[in-house]
Amino acid sequence: MKLHHIILGMVMAAGCLTACDEVDADKRFTGPIGVEAQKNVLIEDFTGQKCVNCPNAAAAIEALQQQYTAERVIAVSVHGGSLSRDEATDKFGLANATSKAYNEHWGVAQWPSGMVDRVGGLQGEDKWAAAVLTRFGVAPKVDLDVANLVYDAASKTLTLDVSVAAKETVTGRLQVWLTESGVVQQQYMPDGTKNNQYVHNHVLRASVNDPYGDQLTLAASATDTKHYTYTLPDVSALKNNTPWNTQNMSVVVFFYNDQQGVMQVIDHKLQ
Image: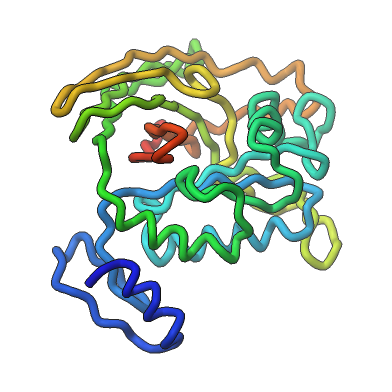
């Protein structure tokens, strides 16, 4: 069954189960409809700790990950803008120079906002579910892999190899980010109260490589492997000087260009 038929069926027959063609068991999701996921999908959630509606966006992401798994729906929370708190000047802050720069680069003017696979521009969280389903139906143009990942706690240094294998001739940028989940920090809630025990997940901590990725052009069936070294920063100079918990951190890798968006994305646990 064509993906657009599935989406149309959702709109015309909400609450009803929709049939789907036979697909492999490991590609079928449980839930209100069956859909074959050809690729993983990236949600960039532009958020802020003083944004009272942002917990609703986080809940929307959690629901999508529960339905389709966190391996298929990969989220990154990008703190920035006027409703954020800066880690350098605020003891509660989770926004950093990189995440603030991304908010400015993408022209985020209201929070929460998000991009799904960098296709279709900024959208509210009510649009994310349909966008995720659409992107599931796009064949990935590359495969990604993380290998030889080693974190040395003594030196706080991370080393890893990231491979891009092209399924067809592609030009794009390889991006490598670090995120952290389970971060207990203050958040304004939809009722206007401040929750000092709010759990922030998939918080963007840093870009391992260039903030806008390494440019690559690969011929069909070609593979390129990049070696990266990253030392976790000394946070003692920051107002929010809480060390990052490497047990809760992930490496998020994606390959994208401005025309086709995110061609593939993976999430690899740091430890």
